[in-house]
Length: 124
Image (cartoon, rainbow, N blue to C red; front, side, top):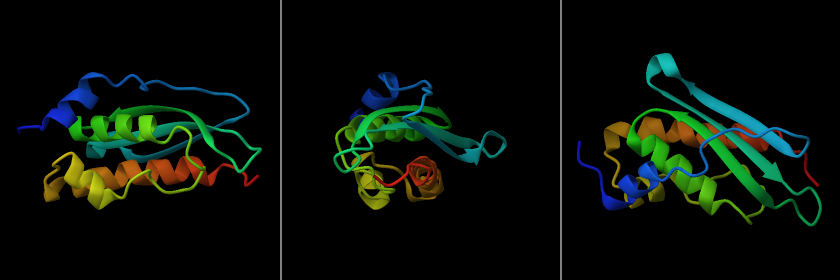
């Protein structure tokens, strides 16, 4: 498989990889390692002033696209309102990272993990 430059860059520099815990961190996961794709997000949310995202960490098991998209989401969500949607839609991410249609389900796992993490955040 050939990966575009953006995918290679975010895959090779997954600086947000890891975990975080604490009172202001929320965790969500989706997928299954046995099925080839699993993602977990830890999201730190400021509960005052509308609930903005302060930090994101992730763990991912999957292809380079899954890891690259997870890193991109972690980086681009900082400062946004804590909403249970990705910073960019799945079709837009698929286009941005030039992900083949047969891998769409893997990016939906990323989205499911994101939604699960933010679903646990209490509304301010």
